[in-house]
Image (cartoon, rainbow, N blue to C red; front, top):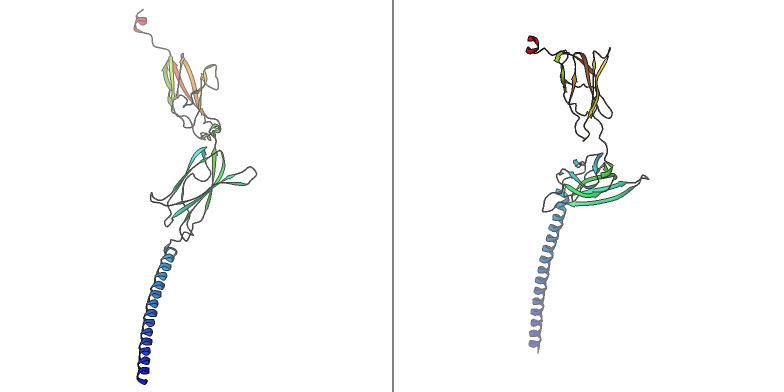
Length: 279
């Protein structure tokens, strides 16, 4: 009997030892799995944090606008906004606000354009009606964004074409070509020539005899313009008899005119022909 009891005790001891070994192996295996999981999660978190670490700081930068420039005017319809690439930007935010009569603003567009496989987005196109707008552009990435600059845009309706500011020609003069000062001509048809003045819409030509101070004959006092909307002519023809004359030419537009300078010339009687002399 004692031998049998001893055998049972020995068997139990061996079984307990085997169970302990299995438990230790299980615990060790679980520990290795947990350790690998922790390492994996740490790597993932580190990779996620890298975006913030390696993003270029855009805080002190601004987007360089190409068009439309601040305060510019464009025709109503499709309007294209253009800007230059900002290093480190992954997207751009463009906002367009319409100014209302009561001083308020109405949002027309608030768009974020991400760079994609087709390239870097540095343009945006939309349709705008007549009015005054404010628009802004800012560069962005995963961690930073640039300063947002605001520009003004005037959109003009097609039927409300704004007149261009006339060119200031008041400080210049018309350069005469012919007849030059003191020229001696033969009576008949005389051609007056001068060079074009940029910005002029009309020319006033006056021809008198013998002089402006003692005018007894007004040969011409004409305003020359082009009714088809082009540049006015730079020549004038008329028939003039023998005598002394002075002429002046002045360029004008809607607001300005050049100074007026006087040239003199003389028209002589035609010489008699050889037949008349023999007779």
